[in-house]
Image (cartoon, rainbow, N blue to C red; front, side, top):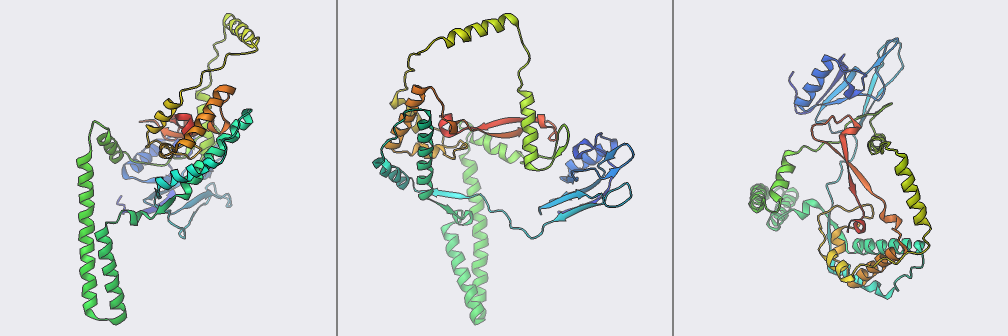
Length: 388
């Protein structure tokens, strides 16, 4: 079979495989799955069976795509009398392409100054755990607002454009406008000249940047291994997951099935022992009889400040949205607020609610079946203050 760079074809493949929802995997299903993986194809199946027999149902009417980037939905429609349901694929050609990753440029000096100006606001008095939660929320809002007010989004194309290349683009565009206005062949020749210059310079800049980047790679600081890993690894989305009662196609269903799988994996084994249970119960009862506890010693403020100044800026933020770069650029007055909050955490022996929220990212284990929810291990993105 010869395939072009992009294609879509579908029909009754009579191939059963648990990957696309069948209750069993046949030889033909194995061959089709193997062929799709080797050829870089995607197999699309509806969420419900496409063929119904007297005592069974199966997914054998499928669509196969290659480099098909348009949004779509696929459904098995029980409208006709034959045992095969019609399969309808809706393709949405009119859509907006997603924007490239944002490049945010922050004026850290102004960011620090704005937070310093908030020093006129008195530090919140914390009398209970509710006040502690409110202080954390207020501090988080101050930091995020200061960062937002002193940051701007830069077009990735402009951010990566060389100044010399921008100048040539300006001259080229001017020559094109002059030619469109006057139809003078001299301006058309000038446009072609600048356009060729821009192409050659763009190619030269690309190779120069890559050469400099490769020269700078060192095994000692892991930059060499990180770059090699990114170039070798193929990033793919989480495929349809086989749940206990259904197949998950949407992001919400996938999240629920992975959450259920993780809950089952981390359920404690029943290791009940009567003697141990009695000992634990007695220890807890004795502990609860104690009315007062000695106060926990608070950490040294100097140690807190030193640690914050050295945090790794390349770590991803958690649910609070505060990055380690924001943390490292905090002024002393804001650091004092953080120390005040930490001291009250020790005083009331209470951890703020907003710092308990964790974002869990599922990562596929090497060599495991991507359709099996148990093949994913969790990576936790904790709030910045929780980590540090």
